[in-house]
Image 1 (cartoon, rainbow, N blue to C red):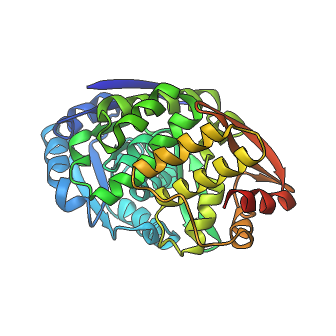
Image 2: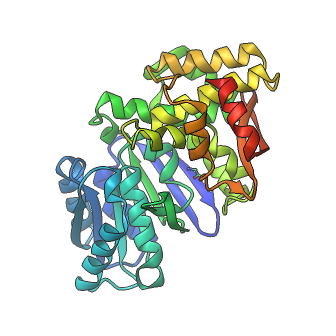
Length: 350
Ligand code: GLY
């Protein structure tokens, strides 16, 4: 097992290893004084891992209740959020009780936002069961629900008490969902770590899971400790996301987040090379590695459509979008770009 400590506005551990779910109860006991634990999960994950989570929490003495949402991004909305709050209120959870997010990014974001706001804040634990949640959304305290106008537009920064990532849960993921998470893993290599990037380029989907996930968590931990509230360095985690969100939105979420981010990273790599921000070799390494994972590098949406979506990006400030562009493998820079320039930048990368 590997352990990564995050010291942000709250200090907590990220545990990564096989066979951890049965230890959930004892680990939760170490970090909060709850008598009741409310598991929030979804219709895909709960049938697979709900029983093990409940048994472990009960064994540790918790009174356990559960709330299961329909799997999918469309559940991350205001009415499901209110249903969850009402469920917690009806079951009389107090500020010393806790929520346990058992699932991927949707469950983690929704649960975290409920925890941030119910009774003005109660403890929560992240138990990510997708690669994407394990390496990104479960750590760092970004919580949110979507609004009709866009993804994650209503949320709060609220750090969990613990992140417990049982690698065995990743074995139950459909290959395509696992592949989706790989886009975020490749992102860390491009952003910060040539050795991680090389390992991914060499091994493809057979990368060493425990080492790689722990390394991604260390890298994210460092960024969150430097810029918890996302005003500077943390923006780099948005590599591929500004244009990727455009692809996701244009496809009405038919193209998954990971695939959209892969396309976004490929577009910025091509555009960066065409502007001599990075070398053609860096561009080719990025494109080849994304392809090696079976992730897409092209989209049929044109620059005009993607540009309009980029304008609603949360990282926009006034008339400028902070675009993250690779300069070499392991290094990226934040380029404030006037909105009128974004369209031609995207065009160069298509
Ligand atoms: N998912 C990007 C971040 O946590 O900042």
